[in-house]
Amino acid sequence: MMTREVIQNEEARLNALRDLHLLDTPPSESFDRITRLASRLFQSPVSTISLTDRDRQWFKSRVGVDLAEIPRAEAPCTYAVQSADVFVVPDMMEDPRFRDSLLARAGIRFYAGAPLITRAGYGLGTLCIIDDKPRGLDKEERTVLADLAAMVMSQIELQNAFGSIDATSGHANENQLFEDIEDLGGRHPGAPLLAVLVEFASLAQVSNGQRVLGAAYAEAFVREATGRIRTLIGNSKRLYHVGQARCVVLDGPLAPKETLAGVHSWQETVDTIADGLRDPILCEGVPLAPEVVFGVYAFPAGEAAPRDVLRRLFNAAADARGSAAPVAAYDESQDLAHQRRFRLLNDIREALAGSDQLRLAYQPRIDMTTGRIVGVEALLRWHHPKIGDVGPAEFIPLVDDTAYSDLLTDWVLATGIAQRAAWRDMDPDCRLSINISAKNLQAPDFSSRLVQMLDQHGLSPTAIELELTEGGLLTRSPCTLAVMSALKQSGVAISIDDFGTGYSSLSYLQSLPIDLIKIDRSFITDLETCLHDQKLVRAVINMAHDLGYRVVAEGVETPGAFDLLQAWGCDEAQGYYIACPLSVDEMASWTVARRTLQRSA
Ligand code: C2E
Ligand code: MG
Ligand code: MG
Image 1 (cartoon, protein in one colour):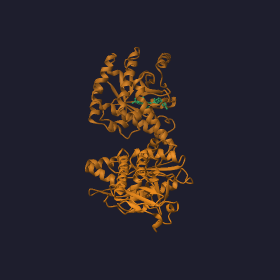
Image 2 (cartoon, protein in one colour):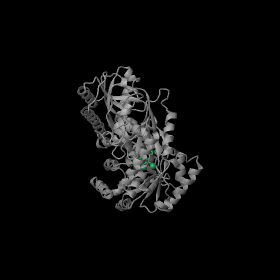
Image 3 (cartoon, protein in one colour):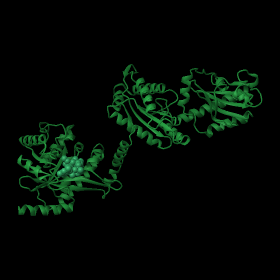
Image 4 (cartoon, helix red, strand yellow):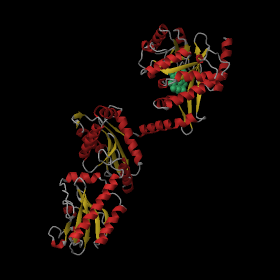
């Protein structure tokens, strides 16, 4: 017999019931087995596992009854769920509490229910047997019914322990979210659902908290925050803890009149949670103000795969984190962009391993005084088998943030150097320019590996120039500097690409071992008409010369711009006016044509 005390707090009881995510779930053989057994043991025509919701008794399992639920008022289960003991009504017609009840009017006479009580002491419902004849239940039979109820509770606990509850917070986890979205899709196809992701701490806040105060502190913070959110949303919405400092509130199916935009209902949910999380959370005596952002996604049940729902919520919350507003709704165009980025990153590895997707284009650079070709820049081209051509301005920044950055640079160096060696009749002073990421210089052996590669092709380090963007060098490390010095010493030239787009000054760059400055093409494009750009470009040319650097103008597209730059003493030029990026074959014909032109000049 159970002797445990039952907590009599109806709201908390309902929360505990909802957190188990049993209501309105499909029938399950593990529960049906127990009701069948009860019915047979007690020779009763009806047996149910009945959960006591706010105003209904919902049957998780039932034998001998067609209804899925009955109103809670007048149901004997309401009494049974409030006590720790088996509750028996030998004859409803004799009991003034039930004489006029729905069950009695339907011909039911006998009821016996054993409460289903959680470890924490909440009554969830009952395992009950019902008969159309009055009868009693002896002590032995009461024990058997209570034992069967305990088996139901073990089954409920087992289900929850089996990967659907988060161990830290005690709330349902993402597995349960996926299952519930799937289930709602099956039972209410097309009905509007609203999901709100609450990210109650930024990554920095979590990791700082853990570093300074320890893991126990972070767990206490998460428990307190999720507990607060659970209370704030009320018990008609479901809560899932889906990441260290993230949870999802799922609402629905919403009334069909609520449009998918769901503006009204999500605003209310977000405001309630934002208000409730405004006060700092006290963790082990330290007050911490949650840094909350929300991602919102409204969708028709059954029309989005559960994992996509969560990914879209994450993306929306990430958009909110990166903007001034604390809430962002899922945006399909943003999502497509995220997916494209993800796909490109995923596929670049295969491109680097194969031989048919990547190639280099070569763009010549000339000396503005002599007109001679003094350099060729290698520019990476990617033809994706499904997407088509993808420009380096799109995929290089993605790769730069990952470990593929070194692999990519190795590919470009190997391909470019082999090509430079193949151009046997090219002027030995003509350098092949290769764009690298500042991150590549964090490998201490970068310089020695490069020199070795050149050696294998019988090339001197003076055949190569490396282009580094100004922005990438802003966070230089001692290793970066050491590698740059080693490169310079070996004879490899180093240039600063896209100069003017970062925030460094020439004097800052002076501390770096560089040879050349490439003025970004954004200052050259409108050079003929923009006085501001004219002043700036002239000043850069003069200052760079004072500091001993050569200057290259990128993106020279017109004879007018070329003439201005030449008049101001710019050393070299690159751009469509001279040549576009060319294939190896095009380079050959361009070189021949250029030489002919020069001879005849
Ligand atoms: P960048 O190094 O500044 O390269 C110059 C870019 O300007 C190239 O774009 C080139 O095609 C384009 N361009 C050249 N002349 C003109 C012109 O007269 N007018 C205009 N409007 N554009 C001109 P692309 O090839 O799309 O490359 C974009 C950027 O991607 C490069 O800028 C470079 O930062 C990066 N990149 C390209 N290949 C590689 C590579 O192999 N490794 C690394 N790390 N980055 C690369
Ligand atoms: Mg470049
Ligand atoms: Mg550039």
